[in-house]
Length: 204
Image (cartoon, rainbow, N blue to C red; front, side, top):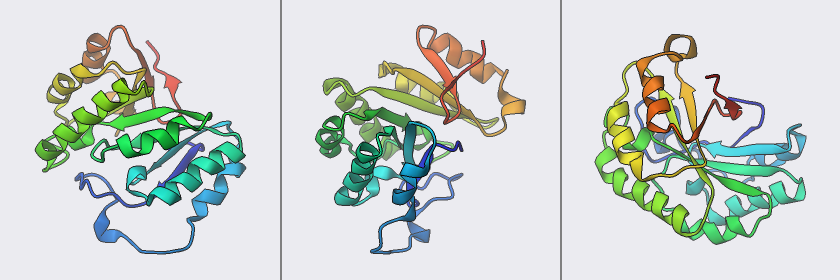
């Protein structure tokens, strides 16, 4: 991950099979997370609030993170798995002039990566529709690996009209020039493709 990533929640209920974050390893702590105070130390004027799952934070605690971004004048996006309804948070986010949008992942809608993908697909689609309805800028994140049901995922995200596609690689040297990446380029030919959490443009 890049130097501009702030892990605001180390827990997630989605249960993706490759993810180190889960409710099972959750530790309750009433103290404010240390990462809240690191926001001002980040050199970049742009950060990503990530996890775990940021939208599983207590509402007031997420509010503190967004307020800290405002105080420190850090533009921010929120990276979500897409399995939590985001509508309750949109008023809070859109009222912050430093909010740039949401990055929604695709792991929860992959049957290979999540055994409960069928129950999450409806929530994921509803979140896409919600962001469109309320004019929230968003991107779609796809993490490529040798064993990934990309065609199935692309079929579902055809409803999306994202700002850009963010591509990650489990092993970039091995997969950067594969058929999978070419599929994404063809499928989203009119959309900018970037790679990694630092949002660098993908070399064509």
